[in-house]
Length: 212
Image (cartoon, rainbow, N blue to C red):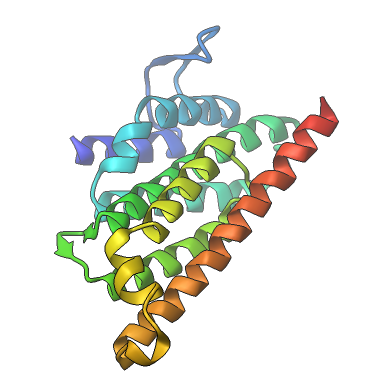
């Protein structure tokens, strides 16, 4: 099934796919012989298979990303598509949503300490979370409120872990081993990232209210 999806995606971006889709439930689009049609097919493909793309293997997600990144890169260097700028942005934003949602799904696995088939200790949990969240913080310049809210939820859940707090945060510094001190340091960095994401959300919500 994943192989079929990749083959179909390749056919769409190359303009070789023949078929029919309904774009945004209002417009029937046949074949992929123009840039506009390819973009509309891509939007429909990303919308239809969003959950699969988020949930499939790392290899599948990497292959999907490579195809789409190359496609968008070629579009960015084309001078003939200015009239399709809004449509390009819609498709790109749909893709960015999926990228961010994929990371947040990984964050949820990290929070449960079962990540990519491994059982994580608390040090690894915090390390993996910090790496992922640093990447995500820059990606949310393309902002989706529900995804940032979910991110905040997962960070707070990690910070409120009772065992983590009792054994690494609430203990006196002199009672911690060197490894325990490292866990506490990473915990502090995670607190800072939580504040960063809350600030990002507050800024966007304030902008939305001002625009309204």
